[in-house]
Length: 413
Image (cartoon, rainbow, N blue to C red; front, side, top):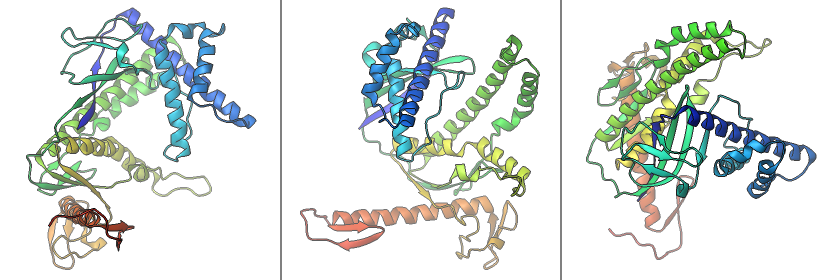
C-alpha cells in the first residue's frame, strides 16, 4: 500500500532568505485576495465563476502588468497553487463542507507551497533543501525522510520558519502485534480514561501559560498600534501562542502513539467538539445562562485538543494495522456496566458513579470508558455481519438487509 506522510522541520535561513520568504508569502497572499475579490465582483455582476484555467490567465496578466511587477520575482508554481487552493475552497463551500472563503490576513498562516517535486532537491546528508528562488536552506534534521518527495510547504509560525516535506512510499500491509481492545472516555478533569483502568492526566498547556500570556497581551494593548514597540510586543505574544501549541501537540502525539501501539481495537466517542464548545452568550434581549461558567468549560475543552487527538489516533491506529471505532457518546457515563440501568442519578458527582439499581460503584470516567468499549465492539460486530451478508449476495440499505437476485459473488464457508 502507498503511504503519504509529511515531515516537518525548522529552517535555519539567512537574513536574505528570510526576506525572500516573507516576500513570497506576501505575493501568495496578494494573489489569493485579488482572485477572491475578482470572483466576488463577477458574482455581483451576475457572471459565471472563473475556473482554475481562467484564473491562471489572470495571474499571467498580473505578473506581466505594470502595477504589480514584483509578482514576477516570486516563483510561479506557489502562486498557481494558491489559485488551486481557492478553487478547492469554493468547491468545499458549495458542497457545504466549509464556509465561504475569506480574505487572507498578513501574519496569519503565512505560507507557500512548491507542488512540483522536480523543482525540489533534498540533501539529507547535509541537512539542507533547495526550493526554487530560495537557494539551499539548512534545516534541523531530526529524522530521516523516507520515500519520494511529492511537495514542500514553507510556513512561518511564531517568528520561526518551517518546511513540511510530503513523501510517498510503498509499505507492506500493516499487521498489529497487539491483541487487546480499549475504550477511551474523554474529559476535562481527566484527559483520557481507558477501560483497562489507566488514565492520562490533562496537560493544560494554555492554563499554565495563561497568566503570562495575559500580561504580555495587556502590555501590547498599551502600545501604539503598528509602532516598533507594538510589533515587538506582538512577537512576544505570538511566541507564547506557538509554545502553547507545540507543547500540546507533543503531548497528543506521545499519547496517541502509545495507545495505537498497545491496542488492536480502539473505541472512542464521536464528540462534536464545535457544538460542545459553542458560546452560551446571546443577545441583549435573550441573554444566555451561566455564561461565565460555560466560557470556562469551553476554554478547558479547547485546551485539551480532543479533535486533534482523534485525528492523530485515526491515522496512527490505521498505520499500526488496528481498528478504530467512533460510537455515540450519549449516556456513556450514566449507564451501569453491570446491569445496564440508565439514569442521571447514577452519576452522583463528577467522579463517582453509583448505580441506584444494583449498587455498582466505580469511577464515572472508567464506567464511561467501559461503555464506550462495549458499544464499539457491538458496532464492529454488526458491521462485520453486514459485510458478510454483502459478500453472500445480500444488499444492505439503511441498516436493513434485503435479498437480491443471485449473482456471481460467493461466500466460502
